[in-house]
Amino acid sequence: MTKRRVVVTGVGLVTPLGTGTRKTWENICAGISGVGLITRFDTSEYAVKIAAEVKDFQVEDFIEKKLAKHLDLFVQYGIAAARLAFEDSGATINEANCQRVGVITGCGMGGLPTIEQNHLSYLDRGPKRISPFFIPMAIPNMASGHISMQLGAKGPNLALSTACAAGTHAVGEAYRSIVYGSCDMVITGGTESVICPLAVGGFSSMKALSTRNDSPTMASRPFDKDRDGFIMSEGSGMLVVEELEHALARGAKIYAEIIGYGASSDAYHIAAPPEDGEGAARCLRLALQDAGLRPEDIDYINAHGTSTPLNDRCETQAIKTVFGDHAKRLAVSSTKSMTGHMLGAAGGIEAAFTALSILEQIAPPTVNLQEASPECDLDYVPNKARKMQIRAAMSNSFGFGGTNGVIVMQHYDG
Image 1 (cartoon, rainbow, N blue to C red):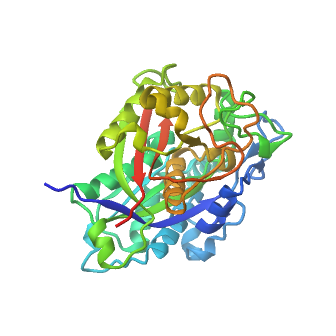
Image 2 (image 1 turned 180 degrees about the vertical axis):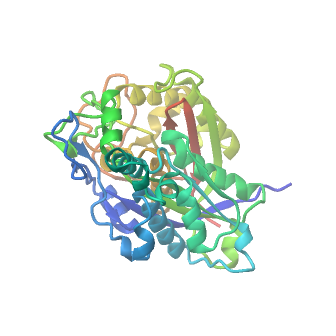
């Protein structure tokens, strides 16, 4: 049986670099950071006072005011990014095709701010003060549920919660659902919004976050010898992915073709990868195998690149293990140096960046890379975007629990 081909026909982004795909992408290519001081809560007792907040989001541009009141921010961002992606795709959903259109989203933590707020209400005034909207605001699948309802998509409606790999797993499973024939089109990606006291406090207690509070825009510095942790971020990245002939029949614009997906487990530790990056390396190989490519066919990797000492070292090792001599010829960059780390949404926005990189033949930079760690010795596209040939590219995501996801895209040339 001939493998059904899958293409990206729409992109929607809500990020700390701007609401809207073009605004975010232009800032990424310009090397601009979205990191600043936290404004959502009082950080006076916190060691960490910085994050990458979405600053220009106007919910009324995307969602009716009465409904928005009862939606956690991660759902609002997800709906907005999905609407932007769907509008960008030029697609329509109607009675004839609605059962063949799916929604698959990723989210790491769900409505944690809503949980915080309702717990405070409970402690202050008892169980009768818990909102009747509390549960449907907090559960992670409400982004996919509301996107499905807003757009009328009646195919598979799924939410994956695989920590920082969730967005990539969502895109990968959307790709598979089209390859296997259960859908013709899927709205997919990731969404997250947990810049709140509990999440910042929790990651801070793990010593996972940067404490470079005096220079926020310089704090996210993947692969740099002075990196000291990741930057909490929020937002959403959504794609419309579509079976090729379905897209061509309606004259859709094609960003890139998704050709491979790998998923694996480290089976090693709750939060740390193995030193040799074995699970990540296996995931990279699986994605290459699924794509039918050789290592030397890849020109660019959008790295997980969190700016933590352990991740950056182990990811570099995994790339070197899989790509051998070709690793030195790869362009490898971390857009988290500008966006911060969106947790479950990261894979969605980075899949979007990978598609845009292929379409526009630009490798985004890794900013704040002043001196790479000795063990981080690849070409990380330091500080300035690079115009280059990108025939095929990968996007990597690795999450707590040892869960790994990699997708492969290539240039579509008809």
